[in-house]
Length: 492
Ligand SMILES: Cc1cc2nc3c(=O)[nH]c(=O)nc-3n(C[C@H](O)[C@H](O)[C@H](O)COP(=O)(O)OP(=O)(O)OC[C@H]3O[C@@H](n4cnc5c(N)ncnc54)[C@H](O)[C@@H]3O)c2cc1C
Image (cartoon, rainbow, N blue to C red; front, side, top):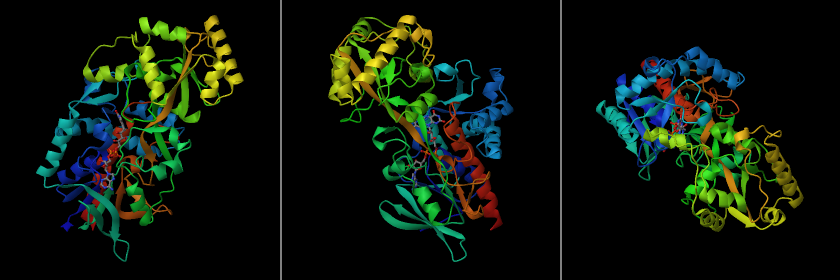
């Protein structure tokens, strides 16, 4: 049995943010991590975080203020956020860049990784050598007497008869144990790893969601908090992010050509066999994710024989929308070139074998294979081909440069792309100090929640298009909650 001041549940971005703040103020802390390794999605997934008015931005002469960022965020959310929380997060963001660096995780200011945001002010601070950086954060934590327990899942917050926090029950290496403490910070990363909760809150068919998020984030925090009366009846959102072609048979399957073709604005049709967007939305990952979500969670992109032949021997001077993400990380220049895909026929055959591609000699036969009305699909193609001939997308205003390929010659191909999520947002009700609140809005003393488990005040109906915000929220909410927990512990 351990005895400490504060237990932090979850060693991802927000949990580490809280834990380091606490040990720096000489609090005794036990940091619980369910898995064998620390970091969560904040490490294995994320490449960086948003900040404004950082030293790096000032050095680079970036003219974008805290006030500008605040206004952009609250406007994006139509003011359906807690303004004080947004303000606090944005105001703290620059100091968090310095704070991360002083604790061992360095960042560099890079171009926004999405094509459509190249003219926006630079706000994305990319981690440098993130795995080593995260290790250094944990070394700092341990050096300051912090205790890290891995394979230790927080299960239940223990309270006395007056409702005062007295500890937490954990499952440590498969055994139930208790850690006595005065306060708990819940930082377990949301619930994307919990199929039942995802089904409950997802507004699309569960089978259509492809989750890239933290599998160990199974909503333990929400359950623990609900059990002590917290208001968990808040909006639960998904961080929609692009769309992916995912094999029906092998989750690890990847095909470079098919991946690249998913990332360019070809013709897309939804489950009703209709176009539903300007496909060049693929240059903004959040909006691409949102439109896919809105149309029911998946769509097909289409090719015909002529386009397949063309792409097999020619390259397009278009941009693969994900290229910048990888090139930025490697500091390599963009190619602005897609293809040629010399084995495209074989790649398509592989996709069909994986259960996510279909081919047929006629539009009607293809429609039957993907269960859409043949009549509707014929009309969609006829209409699209006419728009291509006119060189103008009067239906969805896709940019003229992408109005290049009509689809007229069989065999035709349809490839299924599914809605992709990086995690959940929303969760439990908290105030601007990240105290957890009950259904009457009263503070549950000594209990704090941060990161994906407590982001209702920051995000409204969808994840904003500014890059790195969810990690910025995680680190900064962790730091704020850490300070709140220090104040609380000093009072009791
Ligand atoms: C592929 C990918 C790329 C991303 N890229 C970016 C990006 O570049 N920029 C950005 O801002 N955001 C990005 N995100 C989102 C970002 O990573 C998350 O929003 C952020 O990590 C959330 O922080 P968190 O602390 O809430 O959760 P996490 O960082 O996921 O940490 C949660 C931790 O809690 C642990 N845990 C769960 N349950 C328990 C329990 N019961 N007891 C103890 N421990 C528990 C988990 O194992 C995990 O280690 C990305 C996400 C993914 C998946």
